[in-house]
Amino acid sequence: MVQRAFRCLALVASVIALCAVASPAGATRQQPASTLSTLERGVLTNINGFRHDHKLASLRFSSKLAAAAREHSAEMAQRGYFSHDSANGTSFDKRISRYYSISGKHYWSVGENLLWSSPDVNAVGALNMWLNSPEHRKILLTARWREIGLSAVHVASASGTYGGREVTIVTADFGVRR
Image 1 (cartoon, helix red, strand yellow):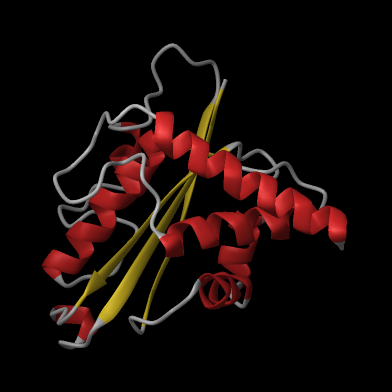
Image 2: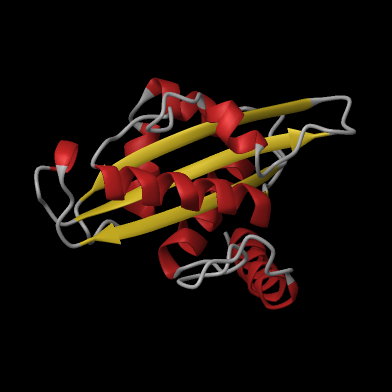
């Protein structure tokens, strides 16, 4: 138990250090792609803890995958829809490839988990929602993933699918390139 707590603390410290030195490429005026919110940091820590418990590699934070996730969460919030596809019908893998390039790689694979919930959802609640869904749990347990990008967007009054409610929309984009 102490060893796991130490690993979690080391992971959080690594993520904080990464955020401090990561390139701001893909940054927006609201939040740079390399900066994690408290919720996003907690989700990353909990996913890696879950993966560790299942003897899987920890995921490294990717600012490129985070930029793809952030764009998708923002688009869903703004346009009032909830789907892995973009509003224009583009599949999630094509959307992600605009940020997480295939070029020059022999192997490329991506996956995505989404959720929307009350605005006070925390990292444990987010992970539990995914774990209670066989499809989302399978994504979390996919051994080939090496990187992750996360986005949590809070909306005071989201239209469309969200019925004008205050919500948090979380996108987790998973990837591997070799």
